[in-house]
Image 1 (cartoon, rainbow, N blue to C red):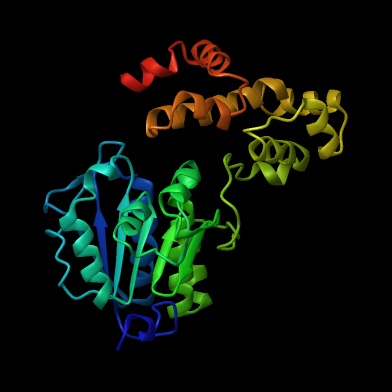
Image 2: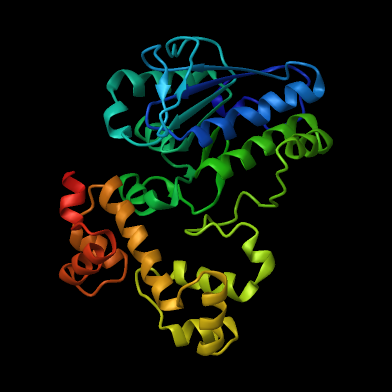
Length: 326
């Protein structure tokens, strides 16, 4: 049976699903937890091993997450080891992990597994193995532009998660939780999925195709929709900043009212918050990518590299070039 003919894992089944989680040092512990805890909870709720999961790494050593917590593994990644679903979880340093042996192993595993996918930066490894060519996919919003340029044969979407045939991709920790809840719901039904969500008091109602936000507002959207709308406008125009007056007009308030809302809710003016949002986005590009300072300045709405460097240095007390070197 060819890969395209294999039944999807996202369908009602009573048999246990074998899930292999390939973890790399530099990943987020929240991504790891989001990938495995819904499956663990489903097993506990049903009283059966509906998801037979295990952790592996390339070396067989524990993967150290960004917060310093190690993830214990059962052994090395073996591409010929039978599995139904392979989940690649990575974060910082993926360029160092994309060895010929790993990419060949991912391709080999994909020939027999029913589903293969990447979580956050794990998408880069899946793409470098050639598994996303001609498919739709997503990755973390910080990497979206660079990912699209690196893999022009992939239809890159800003969705929370994407399932395209036997390949799935997720943009980060919360979208991965959504993805795994979808897996539980697809296989075991809505009642079990609701019970799993209730274990974690998880009440987000997000569709896979919902766009990934730059700013996660959480419950804030329920308290002041005008503030939420203003912040959404700001994050949608990081590269070409709107004036505060334009943001107020689109949010249906006067500039004075908008300033009052921001001062009451956040403790600073709309302009100050907008600048901080842009500079935080710039700092992530400085530390996490190799994008040039000129491109970072352009992407975050500064008129020149010099203007960007001055604003960055004032905010973080360190020039962006020095921060990158350090």
